[in-house]
Amino acid sequence: MFTGIIEAFGKVENLKKDGDNLHITLSSSLAKSLKIDQSVAHNGVCLTVVACNAAQYTVTAISETLKKTNLGTLAVGERVNLERAMKLGDRLDGHLVQGHVDQTATCTEVLSEEGSWKYHFTYDPKKGNITIEKGSITVNGVSLTVVDSGSDSFSVAIIPYTYEHTTFHALKKGTIVNLEFDLIGKYLAKLASKG
Image 1 (cartoon, rainbow, N blue to C red):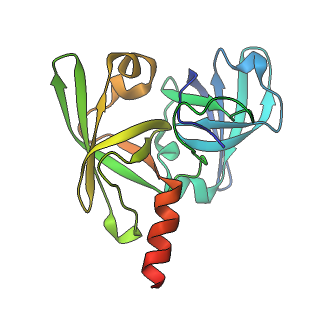
Image 2: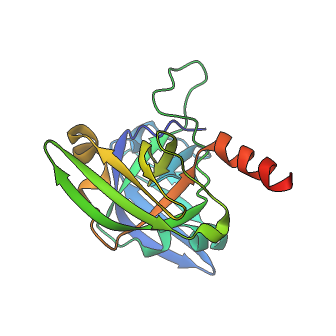
Image 3: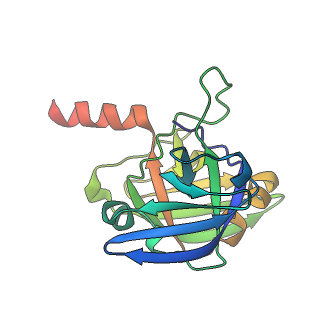
């Protein structure tokens, strides 16, 4: 489990295809604290550390992960949002995040406001996921509050700290992002669809 509070950036150092799998090697300040078999969220995608040293580590994304997320579009030199799994007993500063991406979305607009930014996204509603105003959403691993909610779209407001300390400063119109919808909302939507 994760909280959606980003700890650090990872810089993609190497991408290696292996059949349908993609081995991703990243450099990060977190590398020295990682161990093989640990879970780390990469733009909100929970991946297992398969190799590591003090400066770099490697994770593997399988075909299913590459189909549902934006990890297949990564390029060497690109930065990703990183979060280690939460510790039991720590404060939950974001919301409960599994690191299991539900689908991707496209950024449709970025508005610079007085001291903040508003990002608009659209997604495929056929997958049955929903947002609600003031509900939680995870975008590229970042726990956020929905500002406006539509049947296939939503917006979020980004404060300067989040803008600078996550990859939001690099998002622009047309960027594909990973979405994890609120866990409780997903259960309620599934129960309602069975009624």
